Image (cartoon, rainbow, N blue to C red; front, side, top):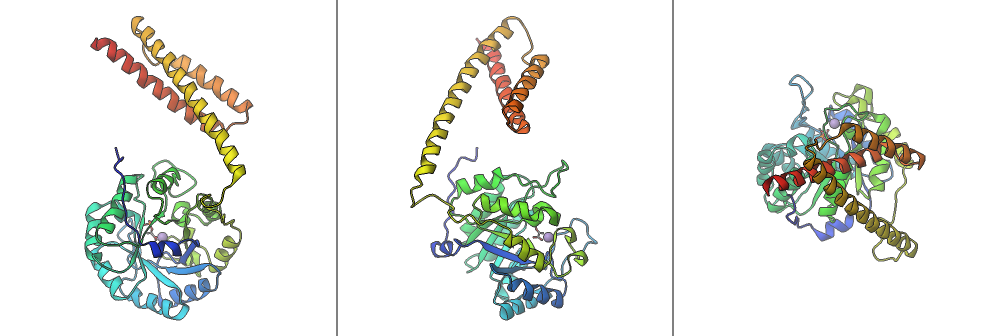
Length: 367
Ligand code: PEP
Ligand code: MN
């Protein structure tokens, strides 16, 4: 299941330019020439900001929402580049968008979350890009499906695009959380594990859905060794025609960036960090012990399964499960461990035990 080795061929020279964090700023949508240029002039003055974003074709949930200015915005972005020296990027969602964006020399194209979910749409974009000398970022799909995300990157790579990157913008969820989209950090971490050379940016604006959380999300992104940020920035966020609640002013962006810690030593390669090595060896030792304990627990669970079978008992014993959970959470609490994390851990352990016992029961039936 998804274990096939992923091979994405990337442009080495371009990868080297990604060692500095890339900061992309600009409005959710280009609304007018004035709004675009005024925002660009201000963000261009912020140290570290080197790229300007603005959507001109906007995928909107409802048909009467502002759907972007379309082709007209391409000229405004070209002006931004000429006047400020910022590189420019926008979202493309079909072959026609690609054709227009390439005609205007847009530096970077990105594929939005609503498009990444559709292999047909991504393939159409890849076909339109065949052989083009352009950088393409792929946002994660709306749903937490890593294979779809990787599949989109592979389709583009097969079309000859070697300056590729991924943007983590969170995942749609039915459960209400403080964020608009659930970060599910484990998914971009797994992407990084499978494709360690692929630049990975974070879009805290679409995760947060609200400017309050931009700082903490941006910091987490850097702590997880992500290569940059895309932050929606507007001269008058309150009047924005799309995503008004999550946009910030250029001034606010400047303050936000100043407040971030940029870990410089992303990897420990090259240098030997003797202190870190000693601690890691201890972690390795403890993890091996932990697995030993789990294995001994599994052996006991199997014996319990056999007994339940003999006694014709149900596998799930709700009272016992309740007692186990209560006891372990009490202990976790006393030890200063996070109750939520330990609860999730025990839910997984318990599910595993149930699966083992059903196997034991079925084996006995079969024999
Ligand atoms: C956007 O960047 O404005 C956008 C529509 O993003 P997403 O595809 O992440 O929803
Ligand atoms: Mn937006």
